[in-house]
Length: 148
Length: 268
Image (cartoon, rainbow over all chains, first blue to last red; front, side):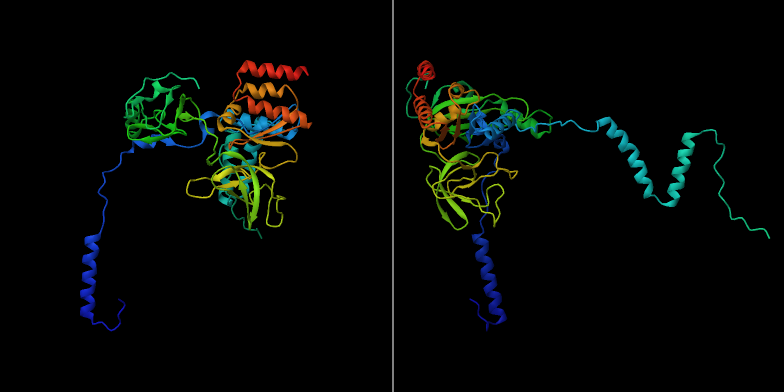
């Protein structure tokens, strides 16, 4: 088939023949579109999901303490349907304190990265917020010419 | 197995509503019709309604879906679990059948016996038609240099990663988080024996009286594999054998016979 010395015309003829053959043989699906109702039934072959079976390793009366710990862990996980048990460890810092600290922290760290202009605006805001009695903003410090 | 005996029927398979047959014997070829409201649920969901997907039904072992409902492929009792709220999506139907031969299913925890090593994997006999392969890296804390100490003849408790009918099953001894969570090599001593699959499921049920009564007797350790294998270890050989005999016999004993047997033992 890979003939080098073919004339361009005979090549064209060959190509046309190929296309015809392909068009005849081109298959297309004639099936009707399947309805999507079947997405609601999930097939599975494991009994575990159907019956909520326990974990297979068990130990009784302290024969194997590690397995007894594991039993408690696995079975409680199964019963809660894999919701993670929130082991709320006694936090050293309470939540409220944490929130307070974080609030102030955000401000202080944020200031570090402000540009000079923004810093001034921030300062003005703070001052306005703190004391309403101040009549006007501080005048811009102009360059004082040194007196001779 | 207790179940209402239906009258003999002709050659054609009957179609019945699924909910009516719960707790009854079903035979392969029966078609179980699902309630019609499922169709409505489907349309509602497509319209984008916020209704909870009650239509999501779990079609368990022994059942296959077909046009219009579920097709039964194993004989046994039809069981149902009601649709409950929370994470469990919808109800489930399955056929509670009895068999001794295990067919590997993905996600099942099984006890296997190592029969050989082939390059990077161990060949494990799980009681199925083919031996499962267990890569040596599938243990907790295993690296290429730190190989697990597994010898031929060891017992392994692991779960299936891949289990089709076309492909050799693959086992691993770690879970999806990378922790072993109890899987791996089962220790020395102990006794391994085989029971039917139905008994294993009975023993693994959430409130199993057999296990509760046994646990009052002696301290012992028990590993149950879904492939029908049980491994028991107690302090003395005699205690181990007693537990083995009880577990083997309890499949065919009634509750009273079992209690009598255990009373005799705890009296001794």
